[in-house]
Length: 529
Ligand code: KIV
Ligand code: ZN
Image 1: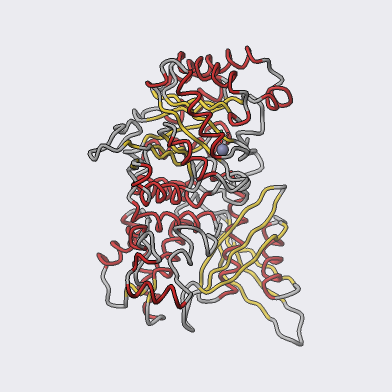
Image 2 (image 1 turned 90 degrees about the vertical axis):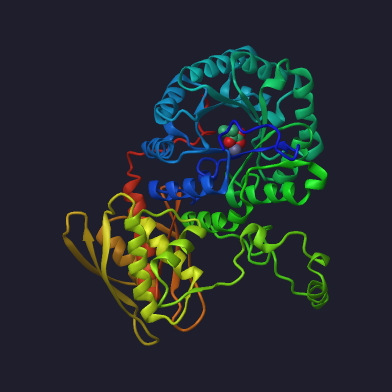
């Protein structure tokens, strides 16, 4: 289904367009940066999920962002692919270049309109803002037919001025008008009233889609989005797991399930295949390294767990006593135990795709080889084991790594100073060896890697957990570091936790090497225009 989905469905309900910005606003979450291969995985999963529009990135922000938008526009067909641009010709032309060749593409132009932003950030008068917005929309229309305009910080903009800006960009040819609550300041009634006001006062508003984009600083992003659709907004901008700047954006899985579960109240439908929500959430959590909180609505580990005896009793008698959604409707696996040593390629392929991974035949073959090796070592293979194998595959297909682990050895115990010896290959196939002492074996491993690569980072978080159960379970190491004010995460798996830790740390170092110092990234809200 393209971004131009029908406005009503067969059942007569109105259709809500789902605009996913996990790859743009979501990626602005500290530590959530993804490489090209990871972004492509997520884009394919979003397509399978049935989102109408994928905001694939902010092409002028960095060569990596440009490349990602270009690759997604080329490879992912079905949803509209969107690129973000500030309201200046250089940004807009760069977005147009990245999207070139995809007939189903959109440029999303934004410019701040609130008094605070006008005075302190832009230092522009109201009439200059209007002129700049109109010129931006017209410029974008040279590249694509489908232009979206966002008056940034709309929720804190004077209603009269907001109406003026929206009228001007509608007249200039924008098809979608997005009303961002950039700082998560709005409350439901006020935000809904803003949409109602625009619907009443903007001429020609019936020919455009009004969109909402809510941040979650007060925990109201989903509530605000729902209040707005009651007043006629027909596009919701959201992210998987609610990722995004600061407290994040409206969570896709929550807003979609609210509309579905309370269809009786909203009478609105989306094109989302809700049974794919859980897999999409897991995938995004894996590639970003940002865990989903246990009690997170819809996709958290406890979302369908009933602990109290009285609830369990009620559930056994009649599920609807305590359950408003069925776990299977959002794709929560009914059983974790999936495959064994004798399972074939077809079963594995089916499982991999149900879990939201999109691998090439070659990638799948490598996962199958890894699966066979693991099946020899472990009695049972769980979903999490397969996820781990797919993850390794996704990371391996990224641009060639600067460093590869050859071997790690460490020595630790109560009566010794922990030490580690590391052996790495560089890109040219040269072997480098070094050793270090540390406060513990993992610290020693990280220090030895830093000595070889010459990159020193500040370790912010380090976690190790078992991905499945049993003595033979694989360990997952998660590393979060800070480097020049930027936060990065790495994640790796192995049945040996020291090896998993070394691999996760090396992943961070490789990410840093890829995003070389030359690649200074612009954040959309950082530079005025
Ligand atoms: O929050 C915001 O205002 C944005 C815009 C770029 C749409 O993300
Ligand atoms: Zn935003």
